[in-house]
Length: 137
Image 1 (tube, rainbow, N blue to C red):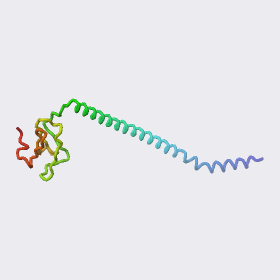
Image 2: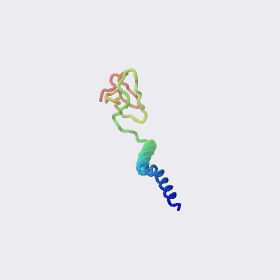
Image 3: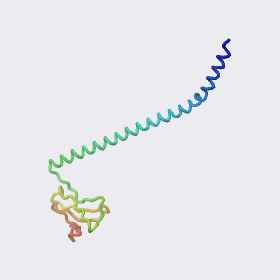
Image 4: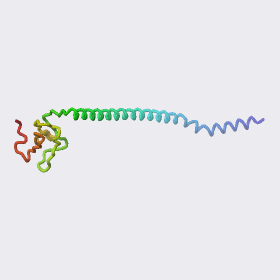
């Protein structure tokens, strides 16, 4: 007796629900793409954390090495020093740090590899003040 009304009601409900059900496959694609992006971002974050931890470990190891060298009194034994971010200029003295070079002679070069002076007996000799500063002995 009420079967026609129930059938028409169900048919109307299905007609109303069809647009919502029709969008579900698109939402699945969006959901899977979002899940994939989240997974990739987590991987990227973990890589960044690993790189940062590696850099921290290097800094700590350099600090320990520096402390041990300072305690033992071992000085650098290099014969050349290259100053980065400096090109030879008569108006600007680079004034390199002369501590720790000991009594040896160390020749100082600019970023282009051009001799700009020497450190000898912990004294800075700049080629624009001393004419023989870059003469190799």
